[in-house]
Image 1 (tube, helix red, strand yellow):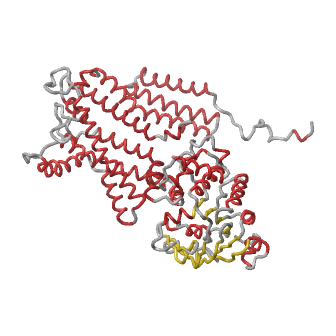
Image 2 (cartoon, one colour; image 1 turned 90 degrees about the vertical axis):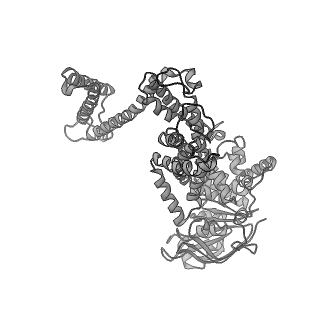
Image 3 (cartoon, chains in turn purple, blue; image 1 turned 45 degrees about the vertical axis):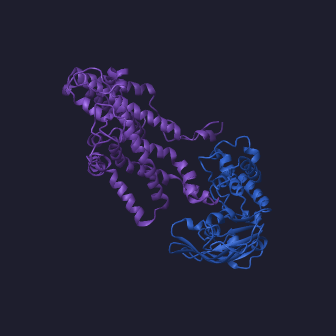
Length: 366
Length: 258
């Protein structure tokens, strides 16, 4: 033992390593949480402060927990650690808060939609069934939604992706900027305006020329056109963003191999951006499948089966929900809930399938 | 196979900015030519104008005359893709196509150029990977993603991809600057082998590397920032590094500036 090993420290303070500090044990966190909960229940439920309901009690508990944690943590661990703890707790609280509506929607849908989740619902239309009759179904509405959203997607995807390719890969100067500006403007179009546009343009002006009686007529196709107007800017914009994310070095690498520009775009750039492009398309499809106003305007809705999207009124799930929810009988609202559940499940299914298809399956396998 | 490249008064612009001014030099076939010089002196710009990659950037253009075996690269009726097929390029950072397997990466140039026959592609893939000294490391996992290889392997994959289309000239833009010393050594060995078949032009910031791999060295420099880059001296590598005839070259290679 030489004097080298006993480095004198400052007076009476205990020897502390500068890199270590005291930490609150896990049980202390749990204890603060339990104490906050008990305190909140005592304050709001037992003492009845501010007519305390459960939501208020919960919010109070979280607030008391945050205050208690910051005080105790700053005493034990120091200020920086206390701020870290409070910020972490706030972020977790925000996460839970954000989940509440989502979980609530799913639970409500499953709960209320379950009553009419039967064979009749998926195999029947509403023909000859009034709001005062039991039975009835959304077969015609499911087919209508699939046809309208399907046709809209078929028109939108090639045009939207092509537009994005033009803006990112070919467009230079004023024209490309103008197009990008108007795509942005179109993103903000209210859906009812898109519906009115198709009503004025397609239903009232074009469709009389297509019928033998020269009378304007509604159709699922007109609804698909309105949905196309709504989907196009979303698809173009998201595809544009995804194409911009593809590194320029990949394009250069391809050009340097003597690969032509359009082939570089089709075989290198698009596949690289594909998962993102598909996500954008599915967001647009989900939005279109849930649109009510334009479909109501130009497809009209009907209780009957009409599988021909090019002629006559057609139902969609969202219009069906609107109709049934408005019926003040004991049969209408359950039908609306089940239709809502069906719509959400349909969109979820389509999204999952699209995601699976766009995955780089060939490369992810061993 | 390998071809001679001749530049006469090549001047390149980025919009209004003149990046290089009046570069004239002759690059001999089946040799390694190194381009050295301080940052921003136009080495890469000159390299990229040789296979018409310079004009990919908006507003970029090239003046002067560049010929490959006395064919003008910038003539009006020249097909850009044919030029790039003849003059391949390897970039500073490895850029394998992320959606493609190792195999698909190597044959990308051929396949997207219209070659469909599986046997041809298989042969070309093996040949290119062997030439890039990568075959032994990857031949059991050709269907795995190219992006899953290490940095050095990725760069050799990019070299394999470049030589799979059988170019006559290979341009390398600082091919080792993102790699560790061992991978760098592997690539330098590869360059020495490739020069038996190809004309190679390499841009490098590493003067030892230029001295090790090249037959001839060109020194580029600028007077000050914003001025166009100029070719200061171009001679046998041994002469540049032992007995340069221009003072500025000597200052640069002895580390007095740059």
